Amino acid sequence: MTLIGPGGAGKSSLLQAVVGELDAGMSVSGAALLDGLPCHTAPRGVGWYRQHTGIEAGVRRPHGDAERRAWSASRLRALRTFVDVPRSLYVLDEPTAGMTEDDALQARAWLKPLSERSFVLMATHDRRDCLALGGMSAIFDAGAVVEAGRSDRLFAQPRTEAGRHYVETGHLAGFGSRSREQSVDGIWWVVPGVLCGMSRPGLVAPAERQFRQLADAGVRHLVTLEEEVPALARSCSSFGIVHHHFHISDMDAPDFDQALAFCRLAEEAVARNEGIAFHCRGGLGRTGTAIATVLLWYGEPVASAIARVRGTQAYAIQSQTQTHFLHQFADRLSDGHLSAVSSHS
Image: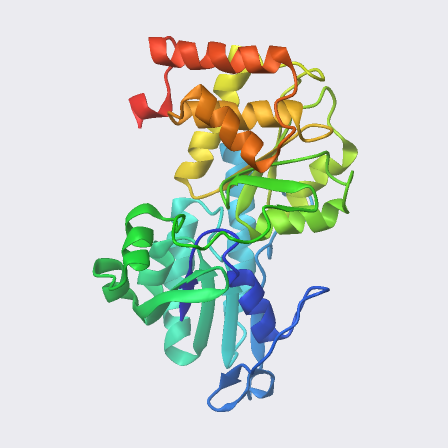
């Protein structure tokens, strides 16, 4: 059984409930049964492959091809060790996330026979995982099943409007799935599961808790927009999040080269279904400007982009310099002086 859905849908929380590993503040009702008995009483036990399993000391989520291969190989080795232990129930959270294509193919080759001898419950954002595993899949969002069925049929002929929308677009925005609080622990979402802003990690909430929230929501990139990199920011790598740095002074705007660089970073991340978070010290001026810049890159008009960002974080985009930059960037995009996503996707 495979759970698929956008970041922050609740897939990881459900898996945690099944294995009995609940975060502080989480509560559950009902029961998780396997063959009519509580899962924890299964004869050969339960195997739990967490979302960040296999991130070894010294191996960071990648900045380049070599680091990506090392990170992927580390994950693959951990998965091999995991599947070699006989279990009655295997629970896996995003086992192929961040892997190279070759390693992901190998991982799926190992998971398929696993599902033929034991029950496998897996969360993923990649439909190729669902199709390779076979069996049943469920589109999951906001803590509930949107549609479920045989994996091949679900992705070929979804029966519900929400299911069709997800299969076609990869998200469920507009189907009532995002009514939850938009800002938690200083993290504010402009595009839930895809694009968010925050203050300096650890400033308003424990950094570890913030990074876990980001990772659980599907964020794989954290962009620092301060003059110096805060010490806690680099620890995001322990949660499978790559750190990036662009030096921008307080109340200032990026230069055009910086803006192009982080827009292309965001474009590549979104193409891989990976979320991206931006932060400065307060998470307002530089952060809001960067997020609005990404929206412009995707074709949103400048007034709409600013309104959308401020609709989520009212004090975002704080200086005249930042507002002026957004108008200049939008003008360059419309004049064809910059190559936006719509022109080369």
